[in-house]
Image 1 (tube, helix red, strand yellow):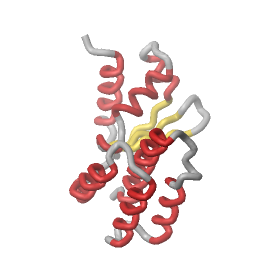
Image 2 (cartoon, rainbow, N blue to C red):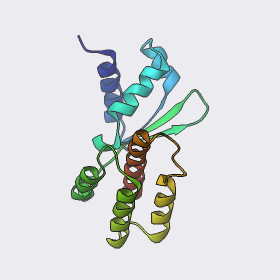
Image 3 (cartoon, rainbow, N blue to C red):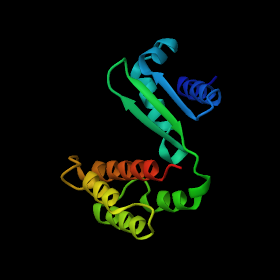
Length: 153
C-alpha cells in the first residue's frame, strides 16, 4: 500500500498534467482536508517531492489558507548548466563557494550585475541567521532557487 506522501505527490502531479501552462495553484488547507491530514503533511510533500532539483519551483502566498503555486520548470535549454550548478552547489555550500558560483554566472552573462548583487546579499552570513551546518544547507537551497528563477525560459 502506498504511503500518504506518495499518494499526495501523485495527486498533485496528476493535477499538473491537466494544466496547459505547467503551473498549478493549490490551497494547502483544502488539500489537507481532502486527504484528511495535517497541513504540515502537505508542506512535507511539497518541500521534499517538488524541489528545484526535481524541476519544480514552489511559491507560497500568505493568507487565504495557504495558497501555493507550483511551477514545472522546463530546463531543456539549460540542462547542462542546471546539472553543473546542482553538482557544484549540492545540498550545502559555504558563502565563499556560493560567491564563486555567482561570479561564474555573471562572467558567463547568465545574470547581470544587479542580480549578482541581490544573490550575494541574500546568501551572506548576516542574512542567514542559523547554526553553521543549517546555514550552509539553507544557503544552497536559496541559491538554487534564485538561479532557477532567473534562468527560467
